Length: 330
Image 1: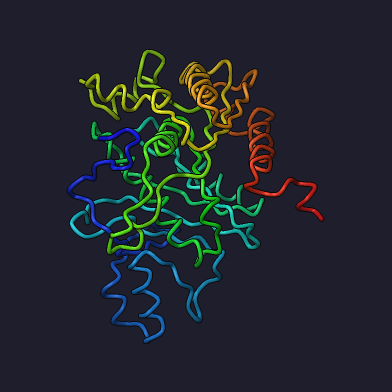
Image 2 (image 1 turned 30 degrees about the horizontal axis):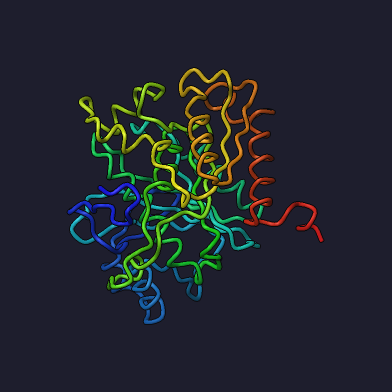
């Protein structure tokens, strides 16, 4: 795999288009084809567009602000359960964030580090796209391809979802922070010759927000995340390739990081290493070193949790992603 050569390898089992929608409350997948036979012409047309990766509201459907869940892949990879849930604000500002929940690459914390974050972003006019990536089980490219696909899908749907395709970022927590930073250091501009419109879109995020992230696969890594991602017998090549502090270039998107000094699960050296690498390549970055909170910042609440949220919004405003609070009130 080329680190930054624009041609990351693709897994042979991956397909191209979402083929099913799931009810957000029940998480029950409903194949699209049987549903089409029961719909009128207008609804059927919208469903076909959804099959192609475009969520289209139809007469009688729920408001566009209701969360929508889309499968990422189809074709030969029908067994993949990777999906995104789109939370759109009632009044959006055009920015969007693909959210990568943590879980040590062995599970997904989609509540506090997923849908809860999306609702918080919605409160500030930002669309939140919660990514339920496939767990790697020693196959490190699997979650990366899911993250890349989620960014492409969001960018390809920018007009329909009322988003700015140049203000689509990633946010990740813990191992999800590793995935988000991997997406920010391993990307391509899309394939302009692709028949699938989604594959023609770039998978480079425009910014990163990384909260107590795993970054390195080296000495300072989180052992469980490394084992789940790279397997028990990780090769030296993969250790380097997925140590994201070693993959930063001048084209890496800007980043905001936050980490507690007393985090004993994912040590703060991870954030420090990435911040230093970004600074060395003149990439805009800010690192909020929190005095306490441990891993998870006191259970996702309290002053340390509030601090990164306030700081990240201020940083996004400084980067021109959103308006500053004072400007937004005018």
